[in-house]
Every structure is written in C-alpha cells, then in structure tokens.
Image (cartoon, rainbow over all chains, first blue to last red):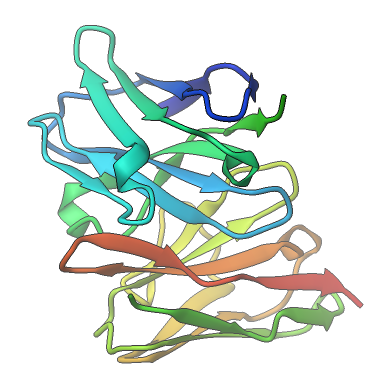
Length: 122
Length: 109
C-alpha cells in the first residue's frame, strides 16, 4: 500500500526558504502510474494545490506561487522535494504530499501524507 | 480560474439523518469533480471521483451525483464518524491547475 511521509523544519524565518521532503514507500516514484505533488492548508482554512510532477520531469505549478517554487524528484531516494523561497506568514500551513493516478487523467488525489506543519515566524 | 462554491458552509444534523452537500462550478466540468472528507487533525480522504464513483473502501452511504456545473454529495444516513469537513475539487485543463471548494462542515446537531 502506497504511503507518503512528509518531513522538514517546522519553523522557517520570514524571507528564508521553506524546504520539505516527501518519502514514498510501498511504491516507486518512478512509476508510470502516478504524478506526485504538494497541497497546503493554512490553519483553520481550506486546501490549496501547490504543484505536481511526473518522474519524467513534467511539472505543473500553481501560477500564484510559481515564481517562488521548485519541486523535484530524486528517484534514487524515492523522494519528492519542495522549495518555496521568500516565505512570509501567509505561507504558514500544513503541507501535504499527494499522489495522482495517471489512469484518472490527474483529476483527483488518491493518496495523502499525514501532513507537516510549517510555521513562518521570526 | 475555475471557482467552486460549496453550500451550505455548515450543516447541522443528527446521526441517522440524510446529508446533502452542494458544489457549484463557475464553468462546466462535465463529470470531472471529486469529493474529499477531512476530520480534525487528519489528511483529507478521497470519497468520490468523476462525480459519482466511490473510491476504494468508501461505504455505500456516500454517493455523488451531478454534471456540468452542479454537483451533490449525499450521505444517506449519517454515522458518528461522518461528522467532518467535506471539500469538492476540480482540475482545469489549461494551464493545468487544481482547485478546491471552501468546504462544508457537517456538525452534530
């Protein structure tokens, strides 16, 4: 069974870079079956899609975050990474790693990590 | 950008009652809408995809319907574990982006 586990610093200072890693277990990040991505949720608020990526390098970014975003895949470690630069308090959120089945034309997110809370504060 | 509007914001019901949640899109989605359930302190869980297909392991009391711009999630008889927040979600084709509704909270009356 596919499992996703997010990790990274829980506290980031304003203007610095937020870096998170998602480790995939029970499956391969190089699989042709899935895209991999990130979704975030500010405390007490709704869900916002951030970005997703295929093992071939095809990447989609949320236009509102694109200028600050980089996601990448490390196939040797079976990991997905996220880097968000120049963070502000508005980036404080629970960050989820997700998978999207290609068979579903990427129309839904079927596996979610438990999420990792990142707080932006000095 | 496609906007999803969920209603009501909060639904106060008793166990055993029927819950009807609405999601309206600002453009036609055909059938390409998904529903998720989120309980406090947990990640969202996929319930329904392509408007009416239950995800693996989802009980039959959950059903989805609709097409175009109007969609409904129905819980036929609320169980105690169903009190949660529910989100709808869509994908836009170009540029590829994914958006969620603002959520409907189903709370115990």
